[in-house]
Length: 191
Image (cartoon, rainbow, N blue to C red; front, side, top):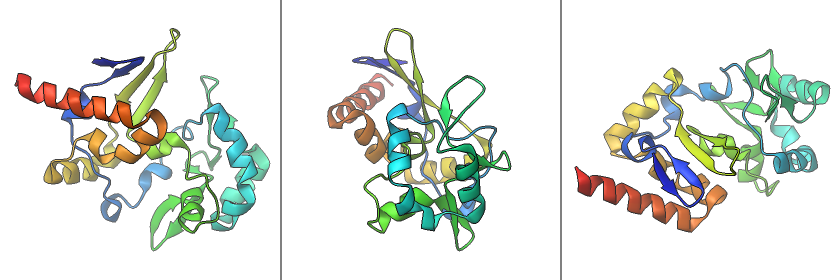
């Protein structure tokens, strides 16, 4: 573990390799799982305010799930998560050419909304943990459905954090990302 300001970072983010390979996984991370994607409290307002902009990109099942369950649901631990369709697929999913994608991000790419997608989705496979002292932990979540991403990352020599530069900067800022680069350089110098 590496401590940077009020963040506790798993060294795996600097050592392990990862690069999404949608041609192989087909976006299965948006389909499988036992709960929706974690949401930050402030994202709930954005999901609701931007609904009419990304709704046309959603599946009819996803629309029905949101309209029945709401823009977010509480998981077993009492945390906000995205609603699901049939207890599996994210309600905010859409499909293009056999690949499951985020309908919110599709609308963002088309210029219909300023909200890209929930930050937890953008950061995946990094999962955030909030500690009682206010610190935030950044952990690398290993999931079998992402085996092709690990293979692709190794082939490219791309550590987890480097493949997720944009969402890391979105959530924590440029200075934090530079600190991760410095931590990686330090770890390499120690080997």
